[in-house]
Structure formats: structure tokens, C-alpha cells
Image (cartoon, rainbow, N blue to C red; front, side, top):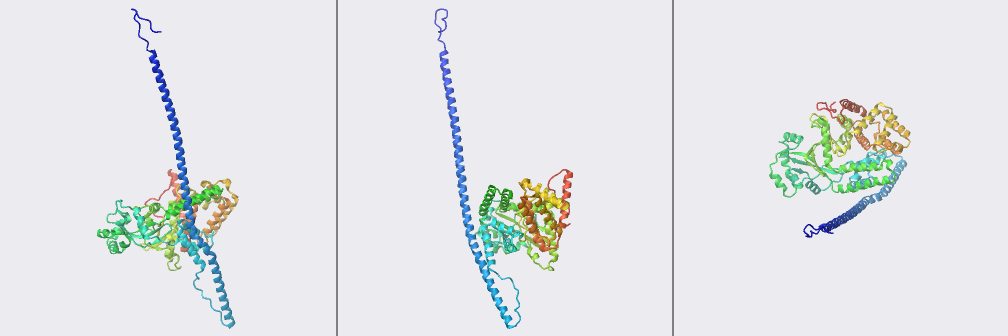
Length: 616
């Protein structure tokens, strides 16, 4: 089997094949073993990956369940809190009604007996003295309900404020009582303000601790459902500041600083942490200016977070019940988003900057509209520092007699109406909460009326497609038949999730909207003859009845217009708001025409050299 012997008879070497065969077998076995090990490892890895996914899923489900349990616990606690607040109030309602009924019966019986005695005596009937309205038990019940609403959180206060503007849906007495929620609410303690300012402006900032540059008075000048405002002084020894700060510092460096130094001791003692007064007093203050310091209330975020989750849960539940065609879920989500934005003061600071940029010269110191200026280094989610604008509540003009401040009332009416139409058609950025509590007035340097606009947290952004839809609707409103305008509303409802096949009785909706438009045109949109709130409420009822959706921005715009109409009507009831609107509508049309010709799209702002609309 071996190789043949070579010449000479010597046997040859044994062949090496068997050795190579054993080596190949060993290599094959090792490769097979490695493949088996790799397969087992891959399988084990896959199994471990599946186990990891199962564990992760289990942990996620456990976390979700724990979060839902915590949410349910918080909702239950919130429900107990609301029940503790409102159950006694509801229990007192029948008692108050019964007490008023008994009191009214006794008064009428006493009056009848007195009248009978006078008649029997043959003397003249007692003259009825008409004095102020007596306070009833029901008035006291309303005061209790409003106090409980203020303690319930911003959701209930905002809902009450909104309900106060719906006189078309609620009785007049209810709206008058709920309108008190626009007034100041209960203020939080000063210690919480110090805590918020310390967290918002920590010591590691370039400016140092907040109390080294910012001094506040112990009592707030105003308190709303979200935050309260203090009068303060911002020290400008090395603060770069803004244009307004520089102007105030240069114009009043000899007057503001001495007053600040004289009142510094009384101002610092109750408001600064212990030990900081000596530090501030020892520093050589150059100049300081008045500022408004806005601080969010305690527990606002907790209450809003729970209430917003409940609103979103209610929106999901309404969809499950098949109520999506009514727009309930959309309404609840939009209200939740609106309220969530109200609790972040950084958004208000951004809106203030936008308004000042858009209004331009009109919002300057000598302009007819005054917008507070934001100090960039003093902006946080829970605290905001802006310029303090002097002024008197516009309620003074609203309650003045026809001859006392007639000139000022007319000037304020023109400014407010022009401002609103300019925001709608020229800037497409509208202040959505211009109720009397957010409006002040004062006399400028030239003696003219100036309107101070505050609380810019709620705005209506009409840029892009909503602004184009609004321009299209206004153009159709002015130039086309009323039925065609109503038909366009049905078409626009498809852009907010509505469907044409879901509309019930389209012809009835068109007829109803057309009648509302004719009703407004009949009185030429005079404020004294036009009930804008009733027209808006009837249009909303038509939309709900016929399942036609409206864009929430348009609804908010209508609500803002109704709120402003209430102010404007008391300033000048015979004013023609449509006549004041026409220049801005034409200006918007010209701007769109220029954009079309030039091949450019988007919002166009007026040229710097153009005369402000308020001066025209």
C-alpha cells in the first residue's frame, strides 16, 4: 500500500496522508463545534433579547399602571377637594332661596299692612323711598361661590370668566355675578414670592441673587387667577437694560434715584432675605426704575396639570361615545392647550415682544398704545419682570357721565377699535383677552389719550392659512350674497376635521346664517343696536345643531370681539365698527395684491416710513 521501494532495495518513507486526514477531521470537528457554539450563542442572545423585551414591556406596563394609579389617586384627591369646596355651597343654595322667599314675604306683608293703615286713616300713601338695592341671601351665596371658584384653580376661574361673556346663553344676573371674577383674586403670601424668585433667578447668574438687583413692595398691586403682580424697582448700576430702561435712567437720574434711596430702607426690610439689606444699602446705587414683577400662584401647575388631564380624558371619552361630530373633543383639547400656555410666563414675554415689534411707533412712549417692555434677563416660566406702566383703570371712562370725559371716551373708542382691526387684518396677531381688567388709560405728554394693554398671555395667531381664510370670508361678507357666505362656512369646516356628509340639513344652516348676517346689516352694525354676543351665540347654536365645525381660532376671535364690543359700546354706543374696519380690510387687500404681483407669500409688515394706522 506504500510507495514502491527505490532502487537499491531501501524501503521508502510512509505516506503523510493519514496525518493530514486526522488534521482535517479535527478542523472539521472544531468548525462544527464553533458553528454549534455560534448557533447556541445566537439563540441564547435572541432568547435573552426576547426576555429583555418582555421585561421592558413588563416594566413599562408596571410604570404605566403605577402612573395611572397615581393619576387616579390625584384625580380622586382633586375630586375630594372640589367636593369639600362645592358641596357646602350647593347645600346652601336652597337655604338662601328659602330665606329670600321668607324675607320677601315678610316685607310685602309689612308694606301691605302699612298701606292699609294709611288708607284707613285717610292720609296720603307713604311715599316709597327708592334706595340702593338691598343685599339678599342669594347675593351672599354668589359671593361664597365666587370665593370657592377662585380657590379651585385657574380652570374654574377661566370657565367662569368665559361664561360671564355668554349673555346669550346664561341669564343676565348670572353673567353679572360671574363678571366679578375679572376683578382681583386672593393673593398668595410674600414668602412664596421670594421662593419663586430665588428658583427662577438663582445665585449662579451673572447678575447674582435676585435681591441684589430687584426690590419689590410687600403688597401686590393686582392678582389674577394665574399670577399676581408687584411693584418693584430694578437697579441699573451695571444693568445694560433696554431702550426704555436707558431712556428712563437718563431722563430721571436725578429724581428716581433719590426717591429710591429714601424709600430703600422701608422697601427692603420686609421684602429682602435677612442680611441682604446691609449689602444693598452699602452699595452705591446709581439709578433704578419702576418695574412690574409677575409671579405665578402656588399650586397652579399642580391644579392645572390634573384638570388638563381630566379634560383630555373627557375628550377621549367623548370620542368613544361617538360625540366627535359635535366637536366636544376638539373643544376640550383646544381649551386644555390654551390654559396650559397661560401658565408659562415665557410665552407672555414672547407675545409682548411680538406686539411691540408689530405695532412699532404706535407702541412707543408717545404712541396711543402702550405695551409693557420685557427685560430679557428677567424672564422665567414662573416669574417675569417688565416695565411698570402708570394708568387708571378704563372702568373710570366706562362709568363716567356723558359730559364728564366725552372727549376722552371717543378717543379711547377710536384707539381700541383701530387697534383690534389692525391686529386682525394688518398684523394677524390678536390679543385675545381685552376685558376691562387688562386695559388702562392715561394722558400722554401732548395731552392725548393713551391705552395701556396688559396680560398678553392669550393671543390668536392668524398667520398662514387661517388669515387667508379670514380675508376670504370678509371679502365675501362685503361683496357676495349672504347665502354664499354661509355656504363657505360649510366648506371651511372640512379644514378642522368636519365632513360635508355629516352636516345635517345644510339648507337650514345656510338660511339661519344668512338671516343673522342680514340682521346685523339692518342696524348697520351700530354697537347700541347690535348684540354681537347674541349673534355669535346663535351662530354657534346653528353650527352645533347642523354639525358644522368652526375653526377654534375664529371662535376665539369672535369671543375677543364680543368682549371688546362690551367695552367699546360703553365708550361710544353709536360708533360704526364696520366703517372703522374698512381701511384695514383695503390695506390687507393691497398687501396681498403686492405679494401676488411680486411673487412673494407670507405676512407683510408695514414699511418703516409708513404712517401708523392709528395716526391716519
